[in-house]
Amino acid sequence: MKYISTRGEAQAIGFLDAVLVGLAPDGGLFVPREWPSFSPAEIAGFANRPYAEVAASVIGRFAGDAVGADAMAEMCADAYSTFSHASVTPLKQLYPDLWLLELFHGPTLAFKDVAMQLLARLYDHVLQRQRRTITIVCATSGDTGGAAVGAFKGSQNVRLVVLFPHGRISEVQRRFMTTASEANVRTVAVDGTFDDCQTILKNLFQDSVFSRAVDLSGVNSINWARIAAQCVYYFTSAAALGAPQRSMRYCVPTGNFGDAYAAYVAKRLGLPIDEIIVATNSNDIMARALNDGRYARGSVSANMSPAMDIQIASNFERLYFEAVERESTETSRAFKAFAEAGRLDIPPAAQNAMKGLFSAHAVSEDETARTILATLNDTGEVIDPHTAVAVAAARRSGKAGGVPLIALSTAHPAKFPEAVRAMARIEPPVPAVVQAQAKLPERIDRLPADAEAVKAYVRQFAGV
Ligand SMILES: *Cc1c(COP(=O)(O)O)cnc(C)c1O
Image (cartoon, rainbow, N blue to C red):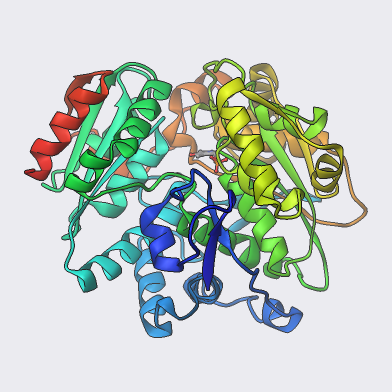
């Protein structure tokens, strides 16, 4: 299986190289040169199978012969044994026609664990063979950093540095990162915003001398292995509710558009998905792009669903590439223009192609709050604010004659206790991991929002 860049000017590379490199050298994103596919019989066969086995099949299709079937099966079994629920990502029925797909039973209680646990094993698999140690630097608005620490702590071949905006993430989120005692992990509170952290990270990657010296790699949401791992739960949930005989609709709370794009990929692989509903908070760049045909950056506002406080949906370039029928010259033009002007107009034919599958709703803070309360009153379920954005959009989108609608539940309510307490006026249950880490000492370094300061820090950590 070969991977090509959406901008058409990078060499096609194999699965493992695409995973290690992250961003393509021409600035584009890697996508499979051809889409693999699953037959209806194969999809039917996923029903009632252990999650790790379905994961090995689906991710194995993307890896091709780059990873042996036994090694893939072992990595998936190991990765998903860290989840506290036997079904890994269980379905829960909320209303007669609406299900929740719970993606938060991993070690750090957010859906990022699903991909990150596998990614860490893939990295170790490759790096051990290459006898190589790399440095991963990641910028986080909260959940990615915790999931990365949870997955990579103790790794022999990876040093991990997490940058987070000082004072702008919840205590529970912070402690998932800062209470790790393993020597290969460092956490840095940056005096700035999440956007500052991302800008610093970009600067690090663009400095080729630095990035070669520390053997820099990234695990952000454009990494293909994360997309591949996120496809899996679309297959398990759809098969559980009757696919391929029955089609499904999904509602996905969206920030960087990784999870919603993974639903698109699942459809390309043969899963019968009729509609993908994109749910955003007031940072509605994706809702505006799909509804108005203009993908335009806005200013970021702070919401009670902070993992979605993003105004550049990085993975959108991959959908655009497909919607313009894989015209890499056009994709390259459009996203270079976006980088400069902060907006791009989607050609009408491409917008129509997207609207054939996607719809989108932006959900206000008020509606999110009311949805947390209504869900509790109607069903007894306590949902987190990200999940509430999805449930609100799902309930707004209407019925579709017997086609089940599955809303993704991306975080455990205990991760955002302040919001849940304020809205539902109840104390969310506190899982044992959260109780345990509340008593552990934290290790945090603090740096100014300055790329040179971060580079010096990382060099010292890497010993180069
Ligand atoms: C990251 C995240 C999202 C958004 O996912 P994207 O793939 O960035 O669209 C939604 N909810 C939670 C809890 C998250 O951590």
